[in-house]
Length: 619
Ligand code: GLA
Image (tube, rainbow, N blue to C red; front, top):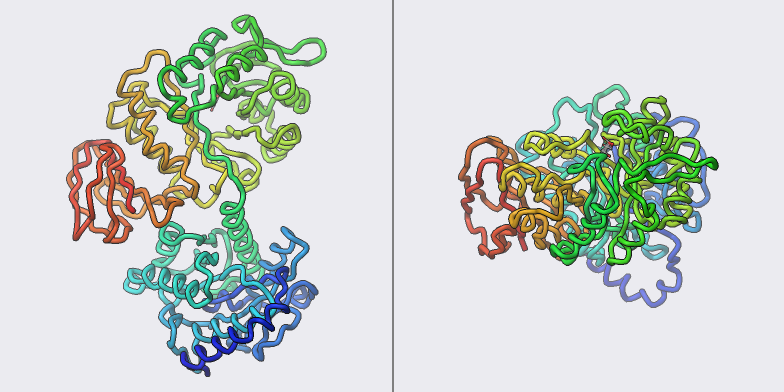
């Protein structure tokens, strides 16, 4: 086996030959380093599919030769090795880009604990880390390394190892990036099976994207084992592989394209329900500018339910008598102010207002059977920029939501991809929505009380895995300035920012208090909501109804940290850097006090009022 020193010599030798080798490197040959333990190596029972060959998927065999990939891809324990995630991963990557070849570099070792994945460490006769580096360097003679796929944790799945795991995992990522000279090399970790008898490790693994940039974690939810409560069966191993591909594609898309941030604006529903009219909407647009909200980044004036008048003989929609100039003139007015205009409909025949607000004009005006026609009204004829599509009519007709929403989204995006689309189905709609829709509601309607706020936060807590740059969990329109206390409003607004939810004010902008305006226009909080990493916060700590939420920001190593007090009493609590999930050297800024508060040191004490929050930026 190679020693560290020999690897160094090999590395220098390879560098010396780089002039020659460079000519042979094919930029369309994408390499993936596979490391970890048995579930990465693959333990599923080989079947007919395992024998299928795809000429565009190769693997580096034990003798460092490129050969067509088949399961078992790994050779760590020849008697046990079987179907793993690698080939399904490669197939999914090829589906996304058929013009490439994939090179798999299998280096996982069944049973290896994370401590075996450090330079110089041995595991039986192997040096897992050193061998992985060596084989990757050899592979790079032919192709370009695109990512590391890691699946490990079963051998560290107890409380004492789990408590030290994150330190080891983040060092591993940094070490690999250093030794392979790729500081932004994507690293995708996978959860161990949810079927393991105990689970200390997954909660730790799930925090990786908060702690290290260009990383993602793949869920193993609903995957099944092969009968030993430890190893994925072949079908699950393949599904896991596809999830690795999706996670990687999300990271790459997020970093390279120009994703739309969560939208900011105002919506008529929370304050006015169906009692809306043209003059009032115009005044909201005026107030958005006059109040300074425009300056803080708010743009959308969204007309919710209540504008419908009916359909004419040709089936074209028209507005009711409270909109005498019509919907196009109203959009023109909004656009004339430099704002954007949003509109509302239902996937079924009838609107929600027709049921819950007894709006008889909401009957027969939903998009069902009129999808293309209504899209032409909304966007081509009237010029709206945003569409929210509700589900009351669809639910009543027992329509299939994926089918209906997909038809609508396709029709909308065929007119203009920049139109922002919101699915309003009052719960997480399902994975079908997460790449098609710009946002999707995850809850029933928000109320102007603190328990409604907490309920929505809890519903969203684990949905971070579905959000990605340009695609967000929508926690519903804001209730700031509509009856909750100042502290409650601040908590509500802060958490919507931490979660990348759209920020749609739901109060009457013409008559808001100074405090409401102060909250809605807190630019330091808004910057967290619009931050370019577009990563949703995750809960890292919970005790006595105090919770710490961390959101990784896109700028260097910055993070936003929210300390939220759910309880009905003020609480004074001391936090160490570790408890807050930050580096002890970070400097902190309080985003409500707009004040730098220095380094955290050994610990810092915070007073968090009842139902209140402290939001910090750690740099
Ligand atoms: C549903 C939606 C609300 C609002 C109303 C309109 O309840 O969830 O946000 O759009 O319909 O009737």
